[in-house]
Length: 304
Image (cartoon, rainbow, N blue to C red; front, side, top):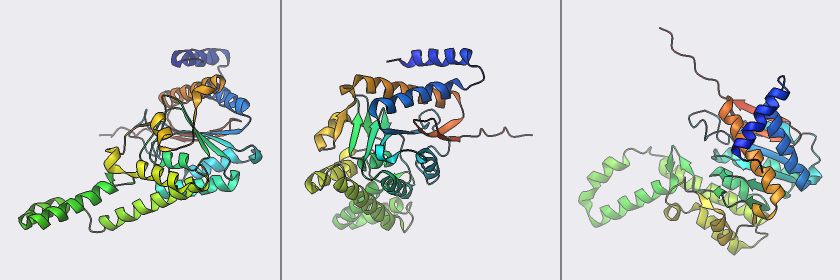
């Protein structure tokens, strides 16, 4: 498997050999195609550059992404199913629901997710919609407890409950809690409850109808574990392959197929180099090299 530096060297060699072509695109597409050849399945990479450009817009899952998937899926033989390579920080719940519905309409339940490194939050929810998740020892999923304005919805509800209990035991604490609770919008409590119910119902249905095949006890355990803010402590917690297997997710070890592991990780390195060396912030690309690319336009310096 070409390592990080060897992929850089291959990109540089490609640049010298074909100066009129984009070497980053050439190398990335070469290995993405290799993944599809090994599996015999359609392959789409859904990549975000949030690690390289944490302040850039459009790195999260949003409604614009469906246009990218429409482009990438067009003309594919859908009977071959879909392997979706995911690297994302997550994003909008509504956009996630709509995207999964679209993928189901295109491929039915024959969707497998491959996680080379990180698929967090809404990215984990997308993985839960698949029949199987391929992870390596270095791969991580994340909690699915919804966020609102950067706040964990369950944490907000917990704080309200703590306030009620403290005031019940000590009415004089009401003045202190009034100052703390006043930072929240009056409708936030109800919105947080709805967001939690919505996200949990969504992934419950996906798991029940595909990966867990109607095993409701397993579904309940998975949803409870991944949505439990109190247990997970932080929305940014990285959940390992071992933990995913222990809770009942259908996890396949990437290391079991050396050729596939090599192709997936080299593809991943190539995407990371693309984000590091271009303005790209998101790429949705299929194994035939058809790509939807979002770029971050640098702001112009202020003129005096």
